Image (cartoon, rainbow, N blue to C red; front, side, top):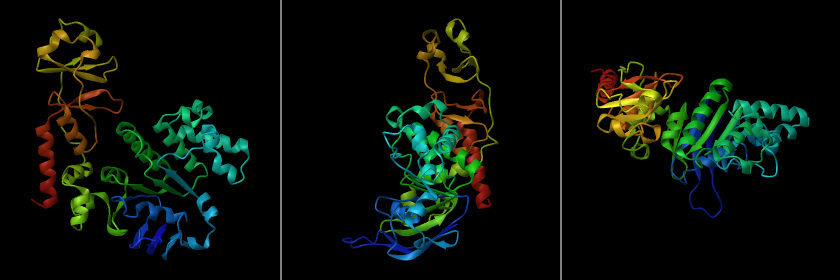
Length: 367
């Protein structure tokens, strides 16, 4: 779909090129992530795809067409572009922001707005948001609008330049999940820039690790980069905890689940209801976890605001990384597993997760 061949980009006044002799192929319908430290040329590489920058040497083709022969405005209108700050026009409503590119392509105002309204639902925003202005939205909502705007003309290629880096970690995780959901439905060819190796391995079908000076250090599937970095630079960039990240590629469907005492709101409010073990788990009326109740403080904990906060949750079928994180982050020493409706399905024991990790390691090594 997108091919770089010997692409170099130099800027006047700079002793070294920003990108040097970059060659790689990006598959249609995949998410390819450019990742690396500051100054490695990842954003420069992205911007050359839609001719915001032109290469000093080499060529870039999209669907077999050399983009140097395509007028830059025409090329940009054929690709979606999402940036870190969302880049919304403050004087236009959300609906009109999303409708911008269809209007530039000649669609009527009514048709462009109708398409914009559809896309708000696609990216998980209520239709009422369409009448608001960007300043009336949270950072995460603005980024969703930015994604909707990029999708408005139904482009085959979506370029994303650190789009989630300006929001808090919780919102960032939600946006990452939303992007993966959209990709399952829309199958765009996405090129995504980030400096965060965790984000790269979560999102990427393939990851291009760039070194300072614009050198392509490794281009492979995330699992391979975590398992077998090609050199010291990649190993150092991925980090010493790459083994933990690699657990994201180990399925966790065999994690054993155990029962735990549950206290519904009425039981929690009654201090006469004892905690039969060391800990009980408080749930709401629908069985969703609220927090932990330690036996030794049972008499003092009779309302949700007094609960001991729980750790992260493990959704049934997620990876061993999520399972281990849930188990280790829990104050009770038991990870909470939930079903697809976020209701408590049971608890997980750290030692059993570690045993599954060891079994997976032995299987990979042939032991």
